[in-house]
Length: 196
Image (cartoon, rainbow, N blue to C red; front, side, top):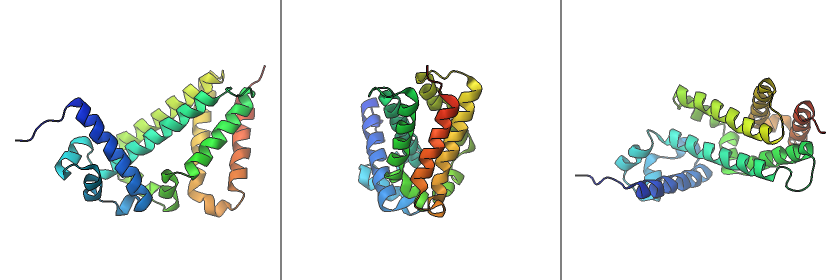
């Protein structure tokens, strides 16, 4: 008879799975990573894996959402912490966010054209929840900047998502990619952030 995990054990195992997922994404990518590799690195059985995640793709998506939440929280915490205007803090912070993503395990998924594959493998409701999650993060970001018009926030969320999706085409955009990103972020700031 299988022994149930305590809540503490569940958290430890989930953390190990997330760490293993990041390592596998760096080394193998989405397609080439197997559940066997993840369980071996995490020290659990394959059966136990499925108690936590219905598929490796859902685990990877969980890791991506956690990464996104962490960098958004860092962005919000850094706003106005250095005496800059809200507008400049936003531009610098969002640009740093894009740089951070570009140098992370997450970008390997984009470089290997695996994001579309990953999204195809996920349940539709998970994608829908993720877009709501994006909107919540953007609402928090803009509320901290004093932007409260819901139409502006919804547009800003869609715009930041669109800018982020250019990561799929970084090679086609060319060597000025990050300069173009900064210009687009500046345009969003100019449209939405009104300084006193």
